[in-house]
Amino acid sequence: KKADVPRVHFLVSAYLKKFQLHPELSADEIEHWMLPRKDVVYCYVRENEKGEINDVCSFYNLPSTVLGHEKHNQLRAAYSYWNVANTVSLQDLMYDALILAKQRDFDVFNALDVMENESFLKELKFGIGDGFLQYYLYNWKCPKIDP
Image (cartoon, rainbow, N blue to C red; front, side, top):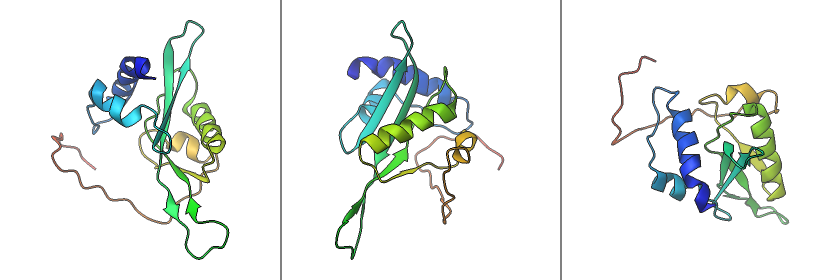
């Protein structure tokens, strides 16, 4: 909910600072990119017993058209987005995300092997994709990073 945006902004920003190359998002951008919108983006927070938000998981919807099938015409694909696990393991948080996506009728859940995602991909039985992603960054101020 909108009231959670400041805390989610803090958590996501602190997490992203762990990586040499990361976006610096404003609270308004977090609100725009992560505030839940049905069939667009889904975001969930975990609260402790005091009601404080300590963990967040999110995914977005990127459906594909299924051609030539008499029963199915769309594949609902969830794509992992920004995830921050402080009080549970990232694997446990992503397990919850898989359940949440299934409850919302997604057919598949995709996650890239970036950031710390390697820590859960094998254990949660993600299959390896068949392509290579290439990124083209423009209008980014980037530090010098050795590959």
